[in-house]
Image (cartoon, rainbow, N blue to C red; front, side, top):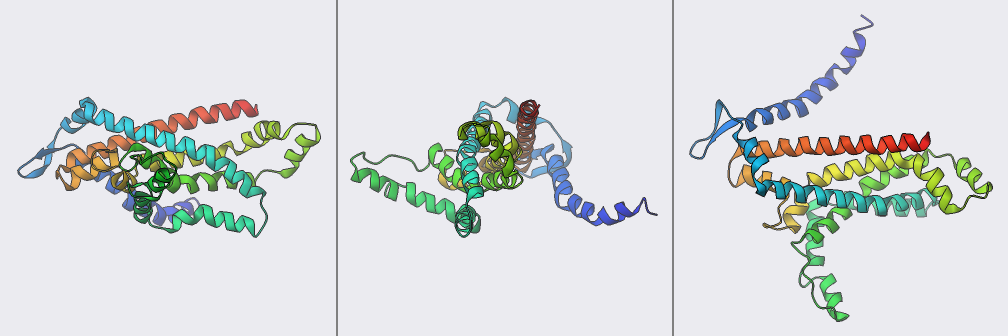
Length: 282
């Protein structure tokens, strides 16, 4: 009876996990293999690999997946370069300034992503604040809306809190005495940051960058509103296949391909960074 107690206690959570995640995922996987008839829609009970063959062999989808992953990688890199120093500054602040900066960092999470996307479209539009400022200094208007630049800027704004919080959490576990010991042994501040602080916050940097990359690769609202109809990413293509083309099996195949590619990239990156982290500590 005692051996079965953990299963009884975790059973409701496992059932909820299966109902909310595994069952929809399995149904989507089955749907992706269904034959699609433009006249009648998906044919239940008839299966084909045509949709996956279409995704893997069509250069159109190759370009969309490449755009999705390089934008996601760039967003993750910018968030690491901006969020890590920001988290370090946040960890060294005292109240009430720490609370004020933390509120500023978390503020984007308190506003709907659609509202944030429309806000950036107003700022980056032809008559927006950015182009108005460029006109005033004589640089003329620059096309930013419906470009990859606009998507990257907005995604960085949305994803930055997901980078700052994990790094800040790692810094809270760092013993200040270790940093003070390095400084007392005549190490420079830069050397202390590079040799003492950074290796110990790498788990936070790793987890934050993985979260940012995954969320950016599957983002829909920002690319849809700031990228326009021509600048497509994978999530917007899935949306089009489901609601415009009504080709649900192809949309499911694209979505599962994105999931698989996301997992491969993230697991490879995790293994690479963790290997270097362990080597640095060793």
